Image 1 (cartoon, protein in one colour):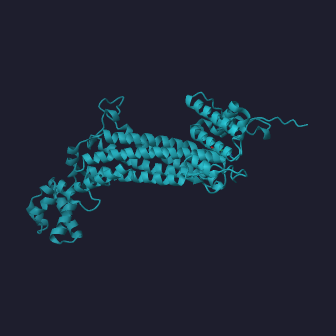
Image 2 (image 1 turned 180 degrees about the vertical axis):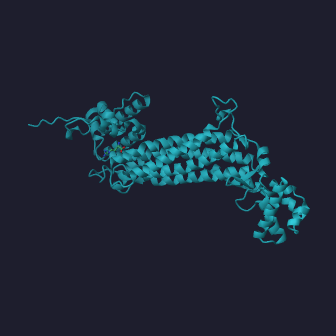
Image 3 (image 1 turned 90 degrees about the vertical axis):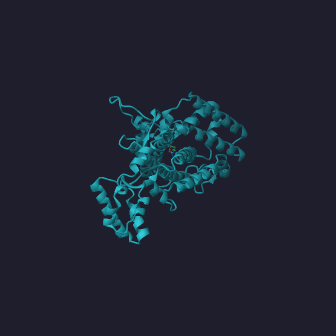
Length: 468
Ligand code: ARG
Protein backbone atom coordinates (compact mmCIF):
# COMPACT_ATOMS: atom_id res chain seq x y z
CA UNK A 1 0.00 0.00 0.00
CA UNK A 2 1.28 3.43 -0.83
CA UNK A 3 1.44 5.77 2.15
CA UNK A 4 2.78 8.66 0.08
CA UNK A 5 0.89 11.88 0.70
CA UNK A 6 1.75 14.86 -1.47
CA UNK A 7 3.21 17.53 0.75
CA UNK A 8 4.83 20.97 0.70
CA UNK A 9 4.78 23.05 -2.44
CA UNK A 10 1.56 22.53 -4.39
CA UNK A 11 3.49 22.99 -7.66
CA UNK A 12 5.51 19.81 -7.22
CA UNK A 13 4.20 18.22 -4.02
CA UNK A 14 3.62 14.94 -5.88
CA UNK A 15 7.27 13.96 -5.67
CA UNK A 16 7.72 15.03 -2.04
CA UNK A 17 6.60 13.47 1.22
CA UNK A 18 7.87 15.96 3.80
CA UNK A 19 7.35 19.72 3.96
CA UNK A 20 10.43 21.89 3.41
CA UNK A 21 12.57 22.84 6.36
CA UNK A 22 12.04 26.37 7.55
CA UNK A 23 15.65 27.21 6.69
CA UNK A 24 15.18 25.93 3.14
CA UNK A 25 12.11 28.06 2.77
CA UNK A 26 14.05 31.07 3.99
CA UNK A 27 17.06 30.57 1.76
CA UNK A 28 15.01 29.51 -1.24
CA UNK A 29 12.16 31.98 -1.33
CA UNK A 30 12.70 35.02 -3.51
CA UNK A 31 9.20 36.44 -3.40
CA UNK A 32 10.16 39.17 -0.92
CA UNK A 33 12.28 40.79 -3.62
CA UNK A 34 11.20 39.32 -6.95
CA UNK A 35 7.62 40.52 -6.57
CA UNK A 36 8.76 43.68 -8.37
CA UNK A 37 8.82 41.50 -11.49
CA UNK A 38 5.05 41.08 -11.40
CA UNK A 39 4.32 43.24 -14.45
CA UNK A 40 6.79 41.59 -16.84
CA UNK A 41 5.88 38.20 -15.39
CA UNK A 42 2.21 38.70 -16.17
CA UNK A 43 2.96 40.23 -19.57
CA UNK A 44 5.10 37.18 -20.39
CA UNK A 45 2.31 34.83 -19.33
CA UNK A 46 -0.24 36.70 -21.38
CA UNK A 47 1.94 36.48 -24.47
CA UNK A 48 2.66 32.81 -23.84
CA UNK A 49 -1.02 31.91 -23.34
CA UNK A 50 -2.08 33.76 -26.48
CA UNK A 51 0.55 31.94 -28.47
CA UNK A 52 -0.55 28.57 -27.03
CA UNK A 53 -4.08 29.29 -28.22
CA UNK A 54 -2.96 30.47 -31.67
CA UNK A 55 -0.90 27.32 -32.08
CA UNK A 56 -3.80 25.10 -31.04
CA UNK A 57 -1.92 23.87 -27.98
CA UNK A 58 -4.63 24.99 -25.54
CA UNK A 59 -8.25 25.83 -26.25
CA UNK A 60 -9.47 29.34 -26.90
CA UNK A 61 -11.75 29.00 -23.91
CA UNK A 62 -8.87 28.18 -21.57
CA UNK A 63 -6.92 31.01 -23.17
CA UNK A 64 -9.71 33.47 -22.38
CA UNK A 65 -9.97 32.29 -18.79
CA UNK A 66 -6.20 32.60 -18.34
CA UNK A 67 -6.12 36.09 -19.85
CA UNK A 68 -8.94 37.28 -17.66
CA UNK A 69 -7.45 35.68 -14.54
CA UNK A 70 -4.06 37.30 -15.22
CA UNK A 71 -5.76 40.68 -15.64
CA UNK A 72 -7.41 40.23 -12.27
CA UNK A 73 -4.10 39.31 -10.66
CA UNK A 74 -2.43 42.36 -12.17
CA UNK A 75 -5.06 44.64 -10.70
CA UNK A 76 -4.93 42.86 -7.34
CA UNK A 77 -1.18 43.36 -7.14
CA UNK A 78 -1.47 46.97 -8.21
CA UNK A 79 -4.23 47.60 -5.68
CA UNK A 80 -2.09 46.03 -2.96
CA UNK A 81 -4.65 43.35 -2.17
CA UNK A 82 -2.68 40.40 -3.51
CA UNK A 83 -1.41 38.06 -0.81
CA UNK A 84 2.13 36.97 -1.54
CA UNK A 85 3.17 33.68 -0.02
CA UNK A 86 6.70 32.64 0.85
CA UNK A 87 5.76 29.00 0.65
CA UNK A 88 5.16 29.62 -3.06
CA UNK A 89 8.77 30.77 -3.41
CA UNK A 90 8.70 33.31 -6.16
CA UNK A 91 6.61 35.62 -8.28
CA UNK A 92 6.02 32.98 -10.96
CA UNK A 93 4.44 30.48 -8.60
CA UNK A 94 2.57 33.11 -6.61
CA UNK A 95 0.90 34.26 -9.80
CA UNK A 96 0.18 30.76 -11.02
CA UNK A 97 -1.26 29.61 -7.70
CA UNK A 98 -3.57 32.60 -7.56
CA UNK A 99 -4.61 31.91 -11.14
CA UNK A 100 -5.60 28.41 -10.09
CA UNK A 101 -7.69 29.84 -7.27
CA UNK A 102 -9.37 32.19 -9.70
CA UNK A 103 -9.98 29.96 -12.73
CA UNK A 104 -9.34 26.40 -11.57
CA UNK A 105 -8.21 23.66 -13.97
CA UNK A 106 -7.34 25.93 -16.91
CA UNK A 107 -4.60 27.62 -14.88
CA UNK A 108 -2.64 24.40 -15.02
CA UNK A 109 -2.42 24.67 -18.82
CA UNK A 110 -0.51 27.98 -18.77
CA UNK A 111 2.76 26.29 -17.90
CA UNK A 112 2.63 24.05 -21.01
CA UNK A 113 5.86 24.35 -23.02
CA UNK A 114 7.36 26.70 -20.46
CA UNK A 115 9.56 26.53 -17.39
CA UNK A 116 10.36 29.02 -14.66
CA UNK A 117 13.83 29.05 -16.17
CA UNK A 118 12.82 30.71 -19.42
CA UNK A 119 10.15 32.63 -17.56
CA UNK A 120 12.53 34.31 -15.12
CA UNK A 121 15.09 35.00 -17.83
CA UNK A 122 12.35 36.71 -19.84
CA UNK A 123 11.04 38.67 -16.85
CA UNK A 124 14.49 39.96 -15.98
CA UNK A 125 15.25 41.01 -19.53
CA UNK A 126 11.97 42.90 -19.74
CA UNK A 127 12.53 44.56 -16.38
CA UNK A 128 16.13 45.54 -17.12
CA UNK A 129 15.13 46.80 -20.57
CA UNK A 130 12.57 49.12 -18.97
CA UNK A 131 15.09 50.42 -16.44
CA UNK A 132 17.61 50.93 -19.24
CA UNK A 133 15.04 53.23 -20.85
CA UNK A 134 14.71 55.14 -17.57
CA UNK A 135 18.47 55.52 -17.32
CA UNK A 136 18.61 56.82 -20.88
CA UNK A 137 15.95 59.41 -20.04
CA UNK A 138 17.76 60.41 -16.82
CA UNK A 139 21.04 60.79 -18.67
CA UNK A 140 19.35 62.86 -21.37
CA UNK A 141 18.01 65.23 -18.74
CA UNK A 142 21.38 65.56 -16.99
CA UNK A 143 23.13 66.21 -20.30
CA UNK A 144 20.59 68.92 -21.15
CA UNK A 145 21.15 70.56 -17.74
CA UNK A 146 24.94 70.52 -18.22
CA UNK A 147 24.71 71.97 -21.72
CA UNK A 148 22.51 74.82 -20.45
CA UNK A 149 24.92 75.71 -17.66
CA UNK A 150 27.89 75.43 -20.02
CA UNK A 151 26.14 77.83 -22.38
CA UNK A 152 25.66 80.37 -19.58
CA UNK A 153 29.34 80.16 -18.65
CA UNK A 154 31.05 79.49 -21.96
CA UNK A 155 33.66 82.15 -21.26
CA UNK A 156 33.93 82.11 -17.47
CA UNK A 157 37.55 81.40 -16.62
CA UNK A 158 38.51 79.03 -13.84
CA UNK A 159 41.64 77.19 -12.85
CA UNK A 160 42.09 73.89 -14.65
CA UNK A 161 43.77 71.32 -12.46
CA UNK A 162 46.05 68.36 -12.74
CA UNK A 163 46.90 66.57 -9.48
CA UNK A 164 44.36 69.06 -8.06
CA UNK A 165 47.10 71.67 -8.44
CA UNK A 166 46.38 74.71 -10.59
CA UNK A 167 47.61 73.78 -14.06
CA UNK A 168 46.26 76.04 -16.80
CA UNK A 169 43.19 78.25 -16.92
CA UNK A 170 40.14 76.74 -18.58
CA UNK A 171 36.57 77.88 -19.10
CA UNK A 172 33.80 76.63 -16.86
CA UNK A 173 31.71 75.85 -19.93
CA UNK A 174 34.49 73.62 -21.22
CA UNK A 175 34.73 71.88 -17.87
CA UNK A 176 31.00 71.11 -17.84
CA UNK A 177 31.11 69.90 -21.43
CA UNK A 178 33.72 67.34 -20.38
CA UNK A 179 30.98 65.73 -18.29
CA UNK A 180 28.57 65.97 -21.20
CA UNK A 181 31.03 63.84 -23.18
CA UNK A 182 31.19 61.25 -20.39
CA UNK A 183 27.45 61.03 -19.85
CA UNK A 184 26.75 60.84 -23.54
CA UNK A 185 29.08 57.85 -23.80
CA UNK A 186 27.17 56.28 -20.91
CA UNK A 187 23.99 56.86 -22.86
CA UNK A 188 25.41 55.28 -25.97
CA UNK A 189 26.73 52.31 -23.96
CA UNK A 190 23.25 51.77 -22.53
CA UNK A 191 21.70 51.85 -25.99
CA UNK A 192 24.25 49.28 -27.17
CA UNK A 193 23.48 47.05 -24.20
CA UNK A 194 19.77 47.13 -25.01
CA UNK A 195 20.45 46.02 -28.58
CA UNK A 196 22.14 42.84 -27.30
CA UNK A 197 19.68 42.27 -24.47
CA UNK A 198 16.61 42.45 -26.65
CA UNK A 199 16.27 38.74 -27.51
CA UNK A 200 13.51 36.67 -26.00
CA UNK A 201 14.31 33.55 -23.92
CA UNK A 202 10.66 32.48 -23.68
CA UNK A 203 10.11 29.04 -25.18
CA UNK A 204 13.57 27.80 -24.30
CA UNK A 205 11.61 26.01 -21.56
CA UNK A 206 13.74 24.36 -18.86
CA UNK A 207 16.88 24.19 -21.02
CA UNK A 208 16.31 22.10 -24.13
CA UNK A 209 13.34 23.67 -25.85
CA UNK A 210 10.02 21.83 -26.14
CA UNK A 211 8.24 19.23 -28.23
CA UNK A 212 5.12 21.43 -28.46
CA UNK A 213 4.70 23.35 -31.73
CA UNK A 214 5.25 26.77 -30.15
CA UNK A 215 5.81 30.00 -32.07
CA UNK A 216 8.73 31.77 -30.50
CA UNK A 217 8.66 34.58 -33.02
CA UNK A 218 5.14 35.43 -31.92
CA UNK A 219 5.95 35.63 -28.20
CA UNK A 220 9.16 37.56 -28.91
CA UNK A 221 7.23 40.06 -31.01
CA UNK A 222 4.39 40.39 -28.52
CA UNK A 223 6.87 41.32 -25.79
CA UNK A 224 8.71 43.86 -27.94
CA UNK A 225 11.84 41.76 -28.41
CA UNK A 226 13.73 41.91 -31.70
CA UNK A 227 13.81 38.12 -32.03
CA UNK A 228 13.82 34.93 -29.97
CA UNK A 229 17.15 33.92 -28.41
CA UNK A 230 18.72 31.33 -30.73
CA UNK A 231 20.02 28.78 -28.27
CA UNK A 232 17.79 27.39 -25.53
CA UNK A 233 20.71 26.58 -23.20
CA UNK A 234 22.13 30.06 -23.55
CA UNK A 235 18.68 31.61 -23.18
CA UNK A 236 18.13 30.20 -19.68
CA UNK A 237 21.77 30.33 -18.49
CA UNK A 238 22.94 33.78 -19.44
CA UNK A 239 22.81 36.89 -17.34
CA UNK A 240 25.35 38.89 -19.26
CA UNK A 241 22.55 41.28 -20.22
CA UNK A 242 22.27 42.12 -16.51
CA UNK A 243 26.04 42.27 -16.14
CA UNK A 244 26.25 44.64 -19.05
CA UNK A 245 23.52 46.81 -17.56
CA UNK A 246 25.39 46.89 -14.24
CA UNK A 247 28.68 47.63 -16.00
CA UNK A 248 27.14 50.61 -17.73
CA UNK A 249 25.69 51.76 -14.41
CA UNK A 250 29.03 51.33 -12.66
CA UNK A 251 30.85 53.41 -15.27
CA UNK A 252 28.10 56.03 -15.16
CA UNK A 253 28.15 56.08 -11.35
CA UNK A 254 31.89 56.66 -11.54
CA UNK A 255 31.26 59.71 -13.70
CA UNK A 256 28.54 60.96 -11.36
CA UNK A 257 30.87 60.43 -8.44
CA UNK A 258 33.59 62.56 -10.03
CA UNK A 259 31.14 65.36 -10.78
CA UNK A 260 29.88 65.08 -7.21
CA UNK A 261 33.40 65.28 -5.81
CA UNK A 262 34.00 68.47 -7.78
CA UNK A 263 30.78 69.99 -6.50
CA UNK A 264 31.88 69.11 -2.97
CA UNK A 265 35.25 70.79 -3.53
CA UNK A 266 33.87 73.79 -5.41
CA UNK A 267 31.28 74.47 -2.74
CA UNK A 268 33.76 74.64 0.16
CA UNK A 269 34.25 78.17 1.49
CA UNK A 270 37.92 77.80 0.53
CA UNK A 271 37.03 77.43 -3.16
CA UNK A 272 33.66 79.14 -3.22
CA UNK A 273 33.19 78.50 -6.97
CA UNK A 274 29.62 77.29 -6.60
CA UNK A 275 26.89 77.40 -3.98
CA UNK A 276 23.96 75.05 -3.67
CA UNK A 277 20.68 76.61 -2.66
CA UNK A 278 18.70 75.45 0.33
CA UNK A 279 16.96 73.04 -2.03
CA UNK A 280 20.14 70.99 -2.30
CA UNK A 281 21.83 71.65 1.03
CA UNK A 282 21.47 70.12 4.45
CA UNK A 283 22.29 71.62 7.80
CA UNK A 284 24.22 70.37 10.80
CA UNK A 285 22.46 69.46 14.02
CA UNK A 286 25.26 71.05 16.07
CA UNK A 287 27.00 73.66 13.90
CA UNK A 288 24.49 76.35 12.93
CA UNK A 289 26.70 77.89 10.25
CA UNK A 290 26.98 74.72 8.15
CA UNK A 291 25.46 74.01 4.78
CA UNK A 292 26.45 70.61 3.56
CA UNK A 293 26.36 69.16 0.05
CA UNK A 294 24.88 65.83 1.21
CA UNK A 295 23.33 64.99 -2.15
CA UNK A 296 26.72 65.26 -3.84
CA UNK A 297 28.32 63.13 -1.15
CA UNK A 298 25.63 60.50 -1.61
CA UNK A 299 26.31 60.40 -5.34
CA UNK A 300 29.85 59.44 -4.40
CA UNK A 301 28.67 57.03 -1.73
CA UNK A 302 26.03 55.23 -3.76
CA UNK A 303 28.63 54.46 -6.39
CA UNK A 304 29.89 51.85 -3.93
CA UNK A 305 26.58 49.98 -3.97
CA UNK A 306 26.48 49.93 -7.74
CA UNK A 307 30.04 48.65 -8.03
CA UNK A 308 29.14 46.08 -5.37
CA UNK A 309 26.16 44.88 -7.40
CA UNK A 310 28.35 44.41 -10.46
CA UNK A 311 31.07 42.52 -8.61
CA UNK A 312 28.40 40.49 -6.81
CA UNK A 313 26.77 39.26 -9.99
CA UNK A 314 30.09 38.66 -11.76
CA UNK A 315 30.98 36.44 -8.82
CA UNK A 316 27.62 34.62 -8.82
CA UNK A 317 27.90 33.78 -12.51
CA UNK A 318 31.53 32.74 -12.50
CA UNK A 319 31.96 28.99 -12.83
CA UNK A 320 28.27 28.05 -13.13
CA UNK A 321 27.76 25.02 -15.35
CA UNK A 322 25.08 25.22 -18.05
CA UNK A 323 22.17 25.47 -17.83
CA UNK A 324 20.15 26.93 -14.94
CA UNK A 325 21.37 26.78 -11.33
CA UNK A 326 19.58 28.36 -8.41
CA UNK A 327 22.60 30.57 -7.79
CA UNK A 328 21.15 32.68 -10.55
CA UNK A 329 18.28 33.75 -8.34
CA UNK A 330 20.94 35.94 -6.71
CA UNK A 331 20.98 38.09 -9.85
CA UNK A 332 18.04 40.12 -8.62
CA UNK A 333 18.55 42.24 -5.53
CA UNK A 334 21.78 43.80 -6.77
CA UNK A 335 20.23 44.69 -10.11
CA UNK A 336 17.09 46.11 -8.49
CA UNK A 337 19.08 48.10 -5.98
CA UNK A 338 21.52 49.44 -8.56
CA UNK A 339 18.67 50.51 -10.85
CA UNK A 340 16.96 52.34 -7.99
CA UNK A 341 20.23 53.98 -6.97
CA UNK A 342 21.14 55.24 -10.43
CA UNK A 343 17.67 56.70 -10.92
CA UNK A 344 17.90 58.84 -7.80
CA UNK A 345 21.54 59.69 -8.52
CA UNK A 346 20.77 60.98 -12.01
CA UNK A 347 17.85 63.02 -10.70
CA UNK A 348 19.95 64.52 -7.89
CA UNK A 349 22.85 65.28 -10.23
CA UNK A 350 20.62 67.08 -12.74
CA UNK A 351 18.94 68.92 -9.86
CA UNK A 352 22.24 70.13 -8.41
CA UNK A 353 23.60 71.17 -11.80
CA UNK A 354 20.49 73.28 -12.38
CA UNK A 355 20.40 74.58 -8.82
CA UNK A 356 24.00 75.60 -8.19
CA UNK A 357 24.87 79.25 -8.46
CA UNK A 358 28.21 79.97 -10.04
CA UNK A 359 30.58 82.58 -8.61
CA UNK A 360 32.46 83.55 -11.75
CA UNK A 361 34.41 86.17 -9.78
CA UNK A 362 35.81 83.57 -7.39
CA UNK A 363 36.65 81.31 -10.31
CA UNK A 364 38.39 84.10 -12.22
CA UNK A 365 40.27 85.16 -9.09
CA UNK A 366 41.60 81.65 -8.63
CA UNK A 367 42.27 81.11 -12.33
CA UNK A 368 45.50 83.09 -12.32
CA UNK A 369 46.79 81.68 -9.05
CA UNK A 370 49.71 79.27 -9.02
CA UNK A 371 51.23 80.92 -12.11
CA UNK A 372 48.69 79.16 -14.28
CA UNK A 373 49.81 80.99 -17.42
CA UNK A 374 53.40 79.73 -17.20
CA UNK A 375 52.81 77.42 -20.18
CA UNK A 376 51.67 80.45 -22.16
CA UNK A 377 55.01 82.14 -21.45
CA UNK A 378 56.91 79.05 -22.56
CA UNK A 379 54.77 78.74 -25.70
CA UNK A 380 55.32 82.44 -26.46
CA UNK A 381 59.11 81.95 -26.24
CA UNK A 382 58.91 79.05 -28.67
CA UNK A 383 56.61 80.85 -31.09
CA UNK A 384 58.18 84.31 -31.01
CA UNK A 385 61.89 83.64 -30.45
CA UNK A 386 62.45 80.18 -31.90
CA UNK A 387 63.83 78.86 -28.61
CA UNK A 388 63.26 75.09 -28.26
CA UNK A 389 60.40 74.10 -25.95
CA UNK A 390 62.61 72.32 -23.42
CA UNK A 391 64.73 75.44 -22.95
CA UNK A 392 61.65 77.68 -22.92
CA UNK A 393 60.34 75.44 -20.12
CA UNK A 394 63.49 76.04 -18.11
CA UNK A 395 63.47 79.81 -18.68
CA UNK A 396 59.83 79.95 -17.62
CA UNK A 397 60.65 77.90 -14.53
CA UNK A 398 63.15 80.54 -13.54
CA UNK A 399 60.61 83.30 -14.10
CA UNK A 400 58.12 81.42 -11.91
CA UNK A 401 60.73 81.03 -9.17
CA UNK A 402 61.39 84.76 -9.33
CA UNK A 403 57.69 85.59 -9.11
CA UNK A 404 57.41 83.24 -6.13
CA UNK A 405 60.31 85.02 -4.45
CA UNK A 406 58.67 88.39 -5.07
CA UNK A 407 55.27 87.12 -4.03
CA UNK A 408 53.74 88.40 -7.26
CA UNK A 409 52.08 87.00 -10.38
CA UNK A 410 54.08 86.23 -13.51
CA UNK A 411 52.36 89.08 -15.33
CA UNK A 412 53.48 91.48 -12.58
CA UNK A 413 57.22 90.86 -13.06
CA UNK A 414 58.99 93.92 -14.51
CA UNK A 415 60.16 93.45 -18.09
CA UNK A 416 63.83 94.12 -17.28
CA UNK A 417 63.85 91.31 -14.73
CA UNK A 418 62.33 88.94 -17.27
CA UNK A 419 64.94 90.08 -19.78
CA UNK A 420 67.67 89.37 -17.23
CA UNK A 421 66.54 85.76 -17.43
CA UNK A 422 66.10 85.75 -21.22
CA UNK A 423 67.05 88.84 -23.28
CA UNK A 424 64.74 87.83 -26.17
CA UNK A 425 61.66 88.53 -24.05
CA UNK A 426 59.82 91.71 -25.13
CA UNK A 427 56.91 93.80 -23.89
CA UNK A 428 54.61 91.73 -26.14
CA UNK A 429 54.87 88.80 -23.75
CA UNK A 430 52.41 90.43 -21.36
CA UNK A 431 49.74 89.96 -24.03
CA UNK A 432 49.65 86.21 -23.33
CA UNK A 433 50.06 86.22 -19.58
CA UNK A 434 46.46 87.07 -18.64
CA UNK A 435 44.10 84.18 -18.02
CA UNK A 436 41.55 85.54 -20.52
CA UNK A 437 44.20 85.68 -23.25
CA UNK A 438 45.39 82.26 -22.24
CA UNK A 439 42.02 80.55 -22.62
CA UNK A 440 41.15 82.52 -25.76
CA UNK A 441 44.34 81.24 -27.37
CA UNK A 442 43.48 77.55 -26.80
CA UNK A 443 41.64 77.19 -30.10
CA UNK A 444 43.01 73.80 -31.15
CA UNK A 445 40.18 71.31 -31.76
CA UNK A 446 38.80 70.24 -28.40
CA UNK A 447 40.56 73.13 -26.63
CA UNK A 448 39.09 75.37 -23.96
CA UNK A 449 38.70 78.68 -25.88
CA UNK A 450 35.26 80.27 -25.45
CA UNK A 451 34.85 80.24 -29.23
CA UNK A 452 35.33 76.46 -29.24
CA UNK A 453 32.98 76.01 -26.32
CA UNK A 454 30.23 77.88 -28.13
CA UNK A 455 30.73 75.72 -31.21
CA UNK A 456 30.53 72.59 -29.09
CA UNK A 457 27.38 73.80 -27.39
CA UNK A 458 25.74 74.40 -30.76
CA UNK A 459 26.78 70.90 -31.82
CA UNK A 460 25.34 69.35 -28.65
CA UNK A 461 22.11 71.28 -28.98
CA UNK A 462 21.69 69.94 -32.52
CA UNK A 463 22.26 66.39 -31.28
CA UNK A 464 19.88 66.78 -28.37
CA UNK A 465 17.21 68.12 -30.71
CA UNK A 466 17.53 65.20 -33.07
CA UNK A 467 17.54 62.76 -30.12
CA UNK A 468 20.85 61.28 -31.30
N1 ARG B 1 12.98 32.18 -8.62
C1 ARG B 1 13.82 31.55 -9.57
C2 ARG B 1 14.92 32.50 -10.00
O1 ARG B 1 14.79 33.64 -9.79
C3 ARG B 1 13.03 31.15 -10.78
C4 ARG B 1 13.60 30.02 -11.55
C5 ARG B 1 13.53 28.78 -10.76
N2 ARG B 1 13.93 27.65 -11.54
C6 ARG B 1 14.22 26.47 -10.99
N3 ARG B 1 14.59 25.55 -11.80
N4 ARG B 1 14.19 26.28 -9.70
O2 ARG B 1 15.93 32.12 -10.57
